[in-house]
Length: 397
Ligand SMILES: [Zn+2]
Image (cartoon, rainbow, N blue to C red; front, top):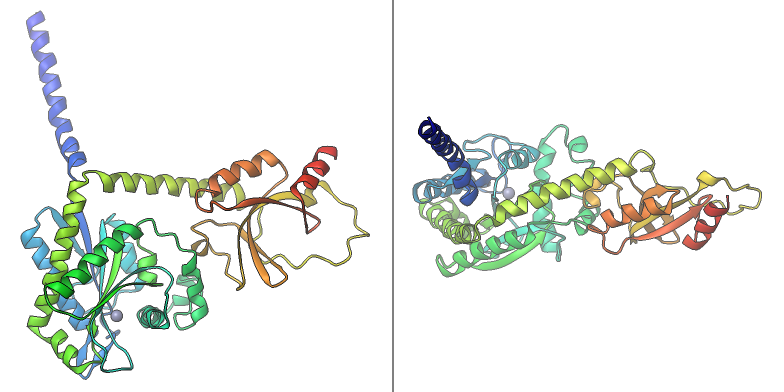
């Protein structure tokens, strides 16, 4: 009897191990998912040189790149945002990547500029442009949203052609910037050393499609259609083969880093999820009480007013800028319930409205993870007062 029980106990253990095995293997080595995003498509031809369209060039490069990955790296899953000549809205491209919880997003484009002699490749990562030239590329690529009927609601009034719209990228905190920059470097490296392209470097600019993806992401400008020699190269089978294989080699190198740091990507995802949770917590704490519209400038005369308790409160100042920035979450590292106030020539941005000092301190702890320099301020009847005065008033009420 005991023997049978032992046997069945062992059997149960064995079954348990067998059941757990796939999970254990999965935890040890995760399948890598890469998104290949050929820009433009359908009614949106992108840049062009005569009858050579950007949408066709980048689709061909993308399909070749996907083919190389499928053939040579069987443990990588390739997902296309489009693999035919169709129009795909920008937000949908990012949504596809996010839905698949992809590990890398590669957007493929070809460049155009007013100076036909300019040639070469550049790879962009998300950030604030450092030159007019980089801003122009972002404007050109972001303009595709104008093909979308509901673009003004969908992208919260973002005007791709207005330089002011791009100020928000100053506030962008991209958790994946380091990895994006690493891959971008590898791409440019391959372009320069293996296929002899003019290397225009890794650059930063405000691309909407990169902003909306929650993973390392790059946008590759594979050459200038405004230069006739390069346009012919981009349109040729050989040229497309070379470009795709250069990106493939860069990807293969990048993947080695992904594989060797076993689990580091998984950890990072978990960390992102925690951050998202914190974000909701902050939103819940603050959004019902804080108005998002601009607070009118304080009244000049306060003498006739009798102060009320609810008119005295603490808040957190996050930032100050010279230009008025929309108080949408995208501009404030995902935080909502931001209010702004114009003080002299400066716009100041706040979060939280608490009458208990402990509560504002707790909020500060959370917010400081995103804004390490956030500090507590106090208001009474619309006027900023010292925190000390606010404490005194609230205690003596
Ligand atoms: Zn493009």
